[in-house]
Image (cartoon, rainbow, N blue to C red):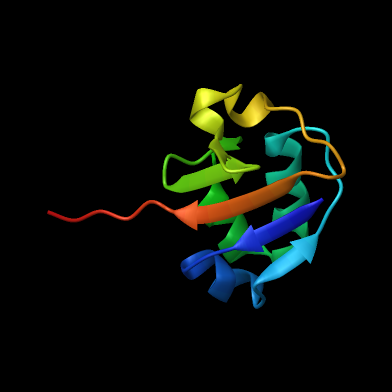
Length: 88
């Protein structure tokens, strides 16, 4: 599947996009963490689960409105990874 990185995740991965294979969002984050190292891992996973500081979209749909980190992925999906942005 195609994975798009935005903002700090683009910096951590060192690229705008990549290709990866995984059956769920959680597995994808683990695959990408192994590929891009500790800093990427710490940004996307916390205590073995998806961090609340990351936003993941699958084909434009927020995983919070799907099955969260257990959202199933297909080879033709597009996954976008964003940091949570705060402000006020």
